[in-house]
Amino acid sequence: MIEFRSDQNIKVDAERISSLVKAIRQDPMGGWFDLPENYNRAEFENIKKAAAKINSDSEYLVCIGIGGSYLGHKAVIEALAPVSPTKVLYAGNSLSSRELRRLLVELGDADFSINVISKSGTTTEPAVAFRILKQKLTEKYGDAAHERIYATTDIKKGALHDEAVAEDYTRFVVPDNVGGRYSVLTAVGLLPLAVAGVNIDALLTGAADECREFLSAGDLGSTAAANYATTRAKLAKHHDVEVLASFEPCLHDFEEWWKQLFGESEGKKHQGIFPASVVYTTDLHSLGQYLQEGRRDIFETMLKFSHDNSSEILVPTEPEDLDGLGYLEGRPLTYLNATAEEATIAAHRSGGIPVLEIIAPELSARSVGALIFFFELSCALSAKLLKVNPFDQPGVEAYKNNMFHLLGKPGF
View 1: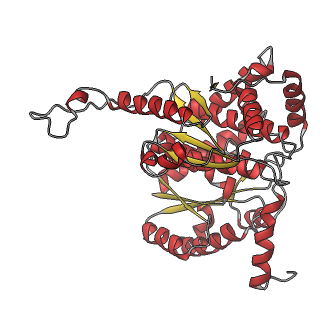
View 2: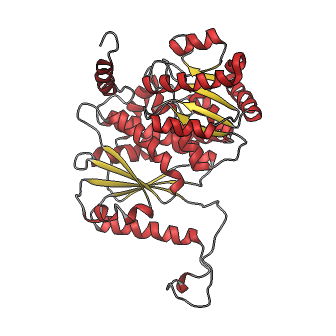
View 3: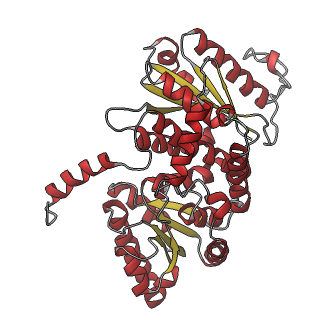
């Protein structure tokens, strides 16, 4: 379903890819690989029921989480712009009082529910936000507040799990064998997505299709994921930065999810490619000069769709051609955008930037599900090729330990 194209002549070691795929699937944190096929059907139905309840009684759902606990579902919601009676808001992804105050102002006196997403329940940013929003919920609903709290957490342990059991919150599971940045197709992402109106059945179907297509290839080295991962690993020898680019502003948060996925998976042992992102044509008028003529330690990956399923808009005809756009009159904006994309790829390649292309069929729940699986697999393979563990993040603890010491946390 997902295609990969490149201007690089790079040979894929199929035997090596097969070995890495086996290692990934056997890894204690490799549960995301088979998830699209082997998800918990009973929990999936409970997610739909909870979403229906939230839609019936809440104008807002506040999702509290950081990193993989919010980036994935926020990305899908922004990309697909689904229709829902409930607006999804986000908290607990920073320590900014200004941002939290803005959210509280937007909530006002409206009916709302909370989905707190944390494996442990002790991560500072979401834990602080949960205390504040739980207080607001209790002030508004009193003893019934617990009926509006949905906890997505560990199945059997942790501070949030224990509180959820004690307070009788509705609970969903963060699987033990799926890390945060690989968790968008678990309850972590599926509950907010269902509330927002995303077709979560189609999302999982797309991911399962992509997984099956990969595994059914007679030669895994011929697959899009293997070629993308191998190309990245080869380019990493002389290129420090990968820029993910799209010509659709609605993919901004998808690119943010991609940056966490690759940055946190590969950036270890002084290895890894720095993940950056741009949205064109907007950023051609800001970073375009640098990309065209700046340092050549960059390569670019274009995220494209072969079909545009949006309603068409044509350039209007005017009596006088005062703005010089007469040659575009009657042409669809999709044609202009596609032409700009083609021109940009040609310009950047002529400027010495390797340009890779990743192509999905259309911007739909099914295609986005396929893209999620494609990038998760490509990332795991790429990290393995760079000889780093794709599933841990030891460096994240450094800032936390310093912060805890400065704040006077016991033991630090």
